[in-house]
Length: 185
Image 1 (cartoon, one colour):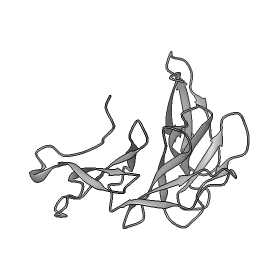
Image 2 (cartoon, rainbow, N blue to C red):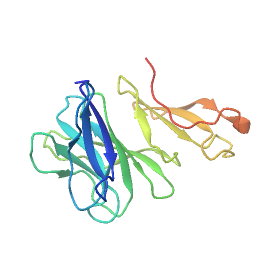
Image 3 (cartoon, rainbow, N blue to C red):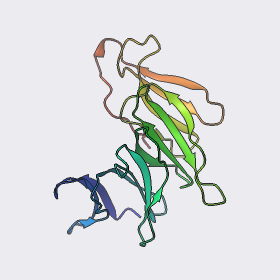
């Protein structure tokens, strides 16, 4: 709804998720568990908050309805699932498995309300995860270049329809190192 800015903070001793009005004002705490919650992302309709949590000791993806219903565990494994990002249509979550070799994964809410098994989109990606294209048809991510010579030396785009992956930019020689990426307008 373009009214809030989300962030995580450990101001009270463990990490929780907060939001602050863009118009200014005091932050509102959205999570308050004894374990850490990080990397929030708000669903396109503004009703669901996705984040990763250390509820079970490793990172897992959770979804919290902002109207007060129970938290939903999307993943529950010994893997290190993190940095969830809602698809533009709000039906799927893209996330990073930080356990080497890293991977980008997608889960989709089924008609039954359950989440689908994880679908691997890319392997050996940088530890910042990926980003949906505005139309939800592609995912951008950073990974080593084709020669494997740079730790995070290339920017890739993968088509979800065909799984074809293409290199958009390779940082040979570290003249313009890649840090973060996002889709422009």
